[in-house]
Length: 212
Image 1 (cartoon, helix red, strand yellow):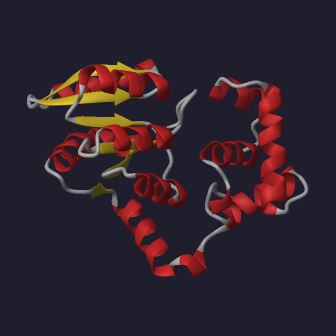
Image 2 (cartoon, rainbow, N blue to C red; image 1 turned 30 degrees about the vertical axis):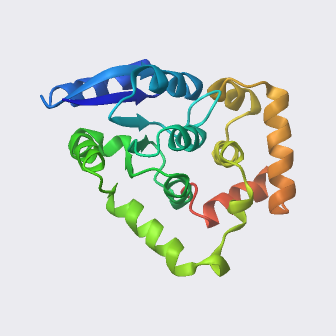
């Protein structure tokens, strides 16, 4: 049996993913985590064969989970399972050390196959993820985006602001204070040389973070 650590901050999502994994008959979820910090702790406690990790988790985000687990367990395959289809997230996850990247929408059809693939030492990317990664490689250093200056949390806040979320809604989503959200917003505007949320939204559309 392939031992799986499942990390996602939504209990209903975890329950659905657990069912998909365990109905395969060849895998079992040996531990669950609701945030990044718990994911790292559970990995140390249970030493799974594969870690399935959401990027957008409170306290410690998925990218930091990847980095820490790669440092502690270099051979542990990590599969990112996320709502985000945008190329920025794919590139960052793979650069951090993820072996696979699929979206939650594709999970019913691809999750078991993806876990098996990374467990066997191979990469597993959706077609969209592979295309985004190939495009980044083709562009090289000269094609780096201004988005590369943002931290993962800043990228997440940028996307939510562009979608019209209020600071309060963003604070609730990531379990941070409204003041912290405002600090992130100020950093984003400064790093991207933007003046307000309207310009921020246009920038997000132009860079494929949200649809127009």
